[in-house]
Each structure stands twice: as structure tokens, then as C-alpha cells.
Figure 1 (cartoon, one colour):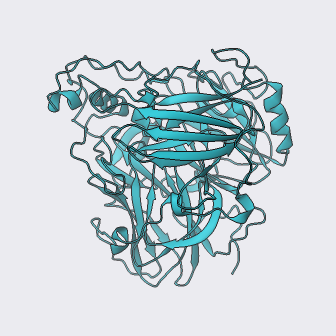
Figure 2 (cartoon, helix red, strand yellow):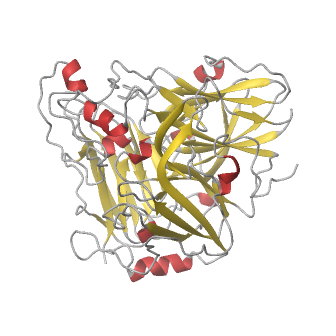
Figure 3 (cartoon, rainbow, N blue to C red):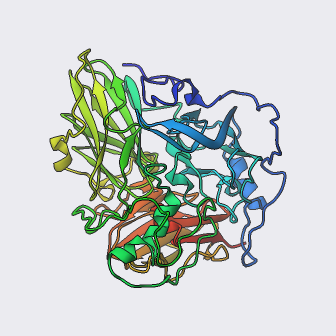
Length: 544
């Protein structure tokens, strides 16, 4: 068997993106573009907040980046713009990178320097976040914390060393923009890749509501808040809740009046959702479509290979409010990585993938046509793609449900890190305890009963081993993400798989250990986009 080259694009992982998958990747800096540009290091951004903390472009940040090395420069251009998108026969008008959904696949090799120009051709501000990447703080893409938002008609150059191989995700970090098509897969290849496989399949999962019967994500968020359709239909009779509006909020849609839902599109609030796997509600948004690689289940993308081929599947959940239970009919999945980091191989029938989590698996293709199904956990609906190893014309039914979905599911807490990435056993230098708070009735999500404020700081110091205990005091599950770092998840084993995003179940606590090795200001937040935009974000800051 041969390893695929890092530039190989395998058949139809993104039917819509076509030849643009490499996003104009080259070895030279891109030529000057029309419109103002902002390049790394040309202007320091200092956010609001207390003094005595390392700011995004401070010398400590630049010194840490230099240690990551400086390999070949790979240049990419993304244009964020209003776009007409084909979801496999269903046309919508939304916002996208380079007019495709998902956005173009970007591939570099570990050690490369990525030079990504984001050209903002939207009518509002935006940014770009490299989710899961341990990068320099001023390239992290958090508006008002690590950079000023990118104004309409201007460009921003994100430049950073890709120091660790893995499966990652680009997405906007402004308002509800990620619940459109402002996301794209990002793969950092390992030049010493230990896995042996014949082909690779990048599988991006998403929940879709934008431009379906008049809906958009801002309207859905308004429906969820007090006075919106959630409160009206539950007969709560409540006025606006105490949570403050997010400073990231998109301005494209006017806020709803407190007790009216006129003009908000169809009611998208999901009631009576339940998931045994998530110990409660699966979610609160009823999405009309669930996509795999940008296509609805009635017209799925098809991955073609030969019987006996060993395939590496890179799963990415780009959804905003949906966990997916994923299985490939008649095939076991061998889990090799989670969130970009290798684990000791473990076989499972299905996976539960929370928002922004990534899993890499190996499968050996059987002869035939097989459904890859992403079941919306605790919700009605699913996504579908197809693995085909013969020339038959028949595809699985859009309602296909492989039996593997109801068999063994290996959770992240049961995964054991590979020896190469296991954290050493050292004493804890600092402990942080943060309560996850809020209710559906008030939609006042936050930490320790506080909504997000850019001036918040949970202090750490460089070089510390930090133990972060997240205590979920709510009735909902939350996929929690820490920027700029990976952590070890304490679970059924004492070692803990390395991750950057993990599910915290309702009325449970989760203990995460990480090394404070990347100075700056870093967001900790729920990756349910509707929760984070309602206040469930905070900041970890490195003290000088």
C-alpha cells in the first residue's frame, strides 16, 4: 500500500467546490489585491481589559511563534461574499468562502507557514478562526479580543506556522455567520505519516437553515430568546431575559420585538427533543436540512473506490447546533485520531461527534454501495453520503439507517492517547473551576451566571500545568472549546485523549488538564453557536 500524496484530492469529497479545493495554494506570497490589507505584525491590536496580561502581539507571543519554525510559505485566498449555493438540487442564497459549501479544502504540510488572505466582500464585518490550531494569538480571529473585525471591502492576512499535523476547521467567529457557509476544512499533513491507507475522504457535516422558507440564523436566535416563539409557544409569558447581547452579533437582521415573531420566518424551535446519549435534549433548533459535504440526503455526494481499499475518513462537524451520530453501513470504524491528535486505535460501530469536533477513522471498503449516515442526535433528520465500490446505478434510500448506528459507540472519554502525544505526569500548578450556567426559558447562557464580556480574564501563567474543571449546572449538553491549546480529557482512563473540543453532559463535570504553553488571550466557549452568541464565552489570559 502507498500513502497518498498530500496534494491528492480524492474523488468527489466536495462536489460543489470542484477545482477550487486547494484555494489557490502556492509557494509565493499573493500579489497585492484591491482594497486595504492588514498584515500580521504591521499593527498591534490591544483589546479592552485589565493590564498585566500578555496581549495578542506582545513579544511573548512572537517568541513562541518563532519556536514553531518557518518552513515553506503556502499562500491561500478566501473571499467571503454573498453567494448562490447548490445544496445538491436545492439552491439557496447565503454567505460563503469562494462561493462553495463547504469552503475550499486547504492542505499544508506540518512545518509550513500558511499565508491566508481573507477578502471581506460581505456587507458586514467578519473574521476567520483556525479551529483547533495552536497558533500565534493575533492570528486567532476573535473579534475585539485578538484583532479588530475585518471591515467590509478590506482584506486581512492570517499568517502562522502550522506546527502540528491533524484535521482542523476554518470558520468565521462573528455572530451567527458560522451557521451559514462561512466554514472550510483544513488539513495539516504529517511528512512522517505512520498510517498506511490507499485513499482519503474528507467528510464535513452541517446543519442548514439559511434561506429556507425565509429563515436565517439571526431570526432563529431571536425565536429562541424570551418573547420569541420559544416563549410564546411554551406559554411562558416572559419578557426579555437578563443576558446581554453578544458583541459578536451579526447586524444583518433586525432584532425581534419582545412579544412578536412576525417576519422571523417559520418557527424553527425544536420541542420535545431527547437523546439518551446526551442525557437530555439533543438541541433546540429544528433544521430543515442536514448536509454532508454540502449536499442534502436526496442527492448525496458519492465517494468511489475499489473493494479492499483502505480509506482514511476525516470527519468534521461544522454544524452550529447539532451533534451527529455517524456510521458507515456494513463497515466498522477504526478510530485513529480525535481533534487532530492520535489515539491508540479502537474499533467502533458509530461515533457521536459534537459541534467542531473532528475524528479520523480507517475503514476497509467492501464490495457494493453503502450509506454513510449522519443522524442528527436527538432531532428528526439526517445527512447522507455514499461509498461505492462498483458501477451499479442504485443508491441507498435517503431514509437509510444502518444498524451500526444503534450498536457500539466509543466516546472520547474512552479513547487513550498515542504514546507520542501523551501528557507527562506532573503536578498541577493552578486549578480553575468554571460553572456552566443558564436555562432554556431565559436563554441566559453563560459561565458562573455571567454573560460574556471581552474584559474578563481567568488568569494563568506561562509554563503552568492547569487543571480546568467545568461543572455543567444546566439541563443541556455543551461542546466546550478552548482556543490555542489542547487538553487531556480525564475519563475512564487516567491518561486522557488530547482534544480541543469536548462534550460536557448536563449536571456532570469534566476535568481537563492543559499546559500553558501559548501566551496570549484565549477564548473558552460553548460551540453551540446559539449558546455562545447568548453569552457562553469567557477568556483565559496569560499574566505577564
